[in-house]
Image (tube, rainbow, N blue to C red):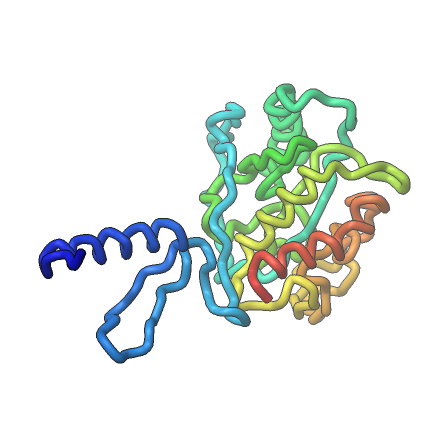
Length: 254
């Protein structure tokens, strides 16, 4: 039986809607005799080869771990952009319950802000074994806040501390690695240096590995030890930096 014209149109429209729901594609401007063009399914993002800024990962704010504030602390300082990530460890015990991390952060804050007179915690972010990311130094998680984490190379870098101690042979939790990679991919400008490469940064301190004013070629995703003479972030975590770099690059679709 041949359906009336109006009913045929309604059936065709219904089938089109079902097809859209099933495939995630939208038919655009299709007319008789013209080729079919479909929109990119939701979630696929930019075309292959285009650099991409991943979405911001979940970040626990300072207020949630009850960060104090030093009344004499100067206003946050900002760099033009984040060009590299410096990975640290906190040199605190590894056998912690993730629920206890806010207390650990308050202890680190006291050591940095008061013990070392940095007026705030030095790291921009901290990541625990469960993969939870915490806001560290004040100034705004989405801005290029200059921290106090790598003498000579604080400007233009983001300091990310893995909560724990990672000497050779120590397992690095997978959730921690994944969270650091996601944070790095989000903080680094996708149009900037490749996370797997190197970047030229100018030392601002003779106490770093490079005299003040020296242009140093440093890893885009490197360890504290790359810019400053220290064992941080530990041999085990340092050995995983190429993996973190590769994951970040994939998230940026490089």
